[in-house]
Image (cartoon, rainbow, N blue to C red; front, side, top):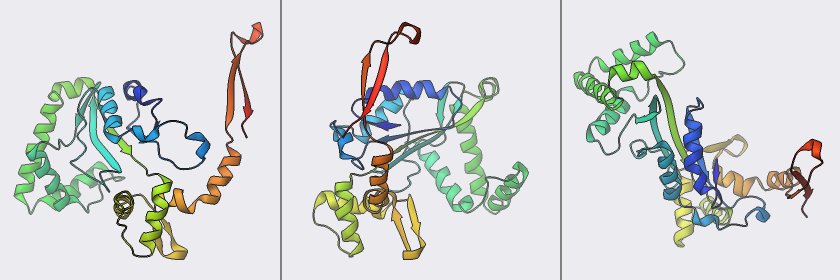
Length: 267
């Protein structure tokens, strides 16, 4: 869901409604100035990441700890991993719990390179056992973490009665094209800007974990640079393919209902 000033106050209700629909991830993106300038009629810069995240938390009914596992720059990405036990969201890692952070560090140290997804459960279990067997402290930390997570979830009876479903909350904050273009150009020249806004944009581009490969140029391009700088022809084509329209309401014939919506392309 792209978040703008006009729909910011809908984020909490969208979160509440969608949680019950069976999905395993909700992703929100504060709007960035990229594309057709005629679409930007609101004060989009008024929508801060904290405001959006606060609305998501309101919809989830709990704090969503996102600092335990950080991917890329925190100004770009927030992710809270957890499970739903019935309607209640339970974090896999609480970034304010030192024991959870110790369990995180042990996981990355001993299991960070293990491939556990897309394999039978017994294969994943065997790989985990082989990795932690030489490290008794890891077994102790894992046992403690499992007990802590079970207590957070309401205990084994609650888990059995209500069931468990993965649920991840994500927020991606993309950057404005007016900032990305000069920042990317300077990075290609090996220059770090003295302008605070452009320098911050450069830092976020350098930390980007959402990059696109350009094998012919031996280059990895951050998503914001791809969309704001390299996709100019694609953006122009989309402007023709998806033209703006004016929506007007008026009366409909009786057999069609009580309202009418008509559209016409805008110049």
